[in-house]
Image 1: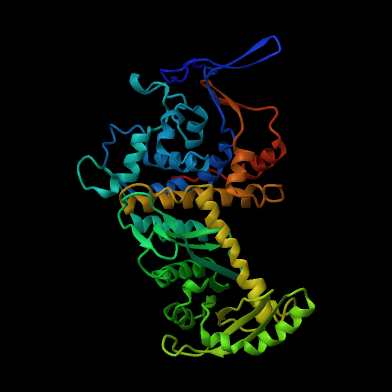
Image 2: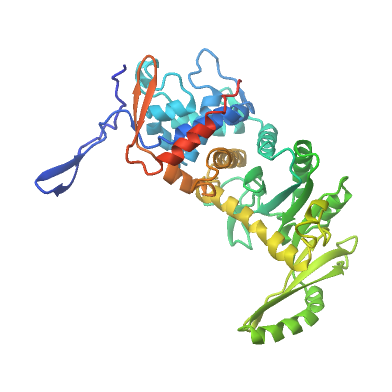
Length: 486
């Protein structure tokens, strides 16, 4: 068994706390091979079983000399993804994380203690921050010093392929949620532009989800329309979904920023048809068409504490931008002394699809289409919020837009890891619908002692860990995932 200890900071000093009765309370960082991320072993099972980091690494070109490589592309990518999943968003965190043998096990290092490395790197099994930085920035310069570059089209296609692979093959219906979100900038990043609506310099990335599964994460500048590039994205997404789920009805759902003629016309022209349900911005003509409904709703509001709502539908066509008349649903809502009209446009029929007839023959009537179907897109906004708050998708602080796009993709693949963990291992548990941040805090942050011998890596988890049953269930579920060959 190896007895080498991780290298500590040169300014290491014992730390004194308040006394406990007659005893002193002293702490230091000399315990050796301990880790606070014992639950990362579960994400290792997901990554190896589904080949996520291996597939993503295949999208990079590596011109480094094979004789000088100590960290393969797959190991670098896995280290970056698992670091984000564990809550370490900054690359400089890895200058000490590289000493963590459990993290090295999760990445797949066969020498988790780094005993076989050069003397100056003894005990450092993983890559340093500077090496990971070259992974992110190498695609912006074409010099002999920049040997790793990313194929952005290949990464885009890989995220889509691995996301679509999560969908059941015999799905009857697939709902594709589109949305754009602001990504504030705080420096002189390439492509920065002041967005009047958000009131800041920002990027405007385009996202697509099916439920909680990420399919698309495209970083864009913010000077253009929120829907630009959406048709091109839908062409690839719909084709991939049809290949995976050939019998599924496909519905595109988005807010009014995506209510554009080119998107609706493209959906209507597809064979089989692609359906859509999109928010529609208010205007005076639409407001006038709700006058009669508002009169009745105000009467209801008098009897209901000043709050009431009603729904209606009608055929509507703009004067210039739309090429045909379409079904529009209007909501007339009274909130005390304030009117709140809202509109959506859709090509969904009131009766829905054949599989709806027994349970809900009027599934897409005006009220149900708005309240039950369109408003459900709020779950997609929660997925974006989770990617920003828990997985640092907005950490776009490099100067180059290409490397910022790469960081956004790393965050999307990390979110896919958590989505697969929920779906495959946490079904029926208290964490079945938890966010990435909650899963990290409750399940991944486990104190662990690591012992490495010739024959095994023995990891002893904290005996007082509260969710031992959940961890054991997740392990049983993931044990069936055999590592993907590559």
